[in-house]
Image (tube, rainbow, N blue to C red; front, side, top):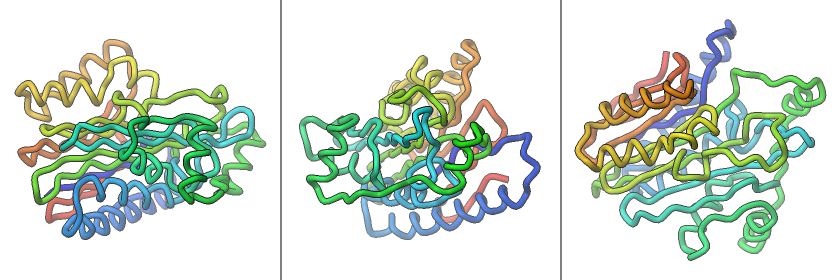
Length: 280
């Protein structure tokens, strides 16, 4: 059993060591709790659980405390993929919910498994997900002052390998902040979140860059074709560099290989495979 999570990027220009320490502590706590959860649950259940914890943490840009779009509204996107069944589900630009990843998880049971906008909200309400305002005073202040705090940018995600050898991946985002209303990121697409029987990947970074190279699906396809996870990531990032792309990934292969890579030195992550490891 193995597990890895991420919480976006930490700006290299930020000298606030308290913020860095807070993210290290939060990721350590969430990775440990999710590892314990994995002991008695499937990979699919675990990635939804881990990303829900990340969505509840104010330090990360997903769920509570997400970035505000240019019209003053928060729109959330999340997805989940079951490597065993190859089923993908997601919500795009959903509003006023606490855990978009849980709604995406529920959609795995439906034929129409990716919903956007008002349809996603209606689905959430019909399934007893209540109104929830994800805007925090800090985010409102940043919006009013037309600021965009870089060290909280990025998505959150989790990839897990369970005791049965099954893989799953989940990703959630609050967007980049001040974007055109209803912009679609990579997080609820197979470019940003993908898993099969060979590997699982969750991405963070600039959504448009990740979509342009179909990053998650590209890496997983290469592992399926015989690449190691590291080699698949390295080759895919070389191709990302060709378009000056900006991204980070976490991943696990079916053979237990666990790996993370980014085009920026401060992606924040934590992994647990019996021993906890955290970015530094």
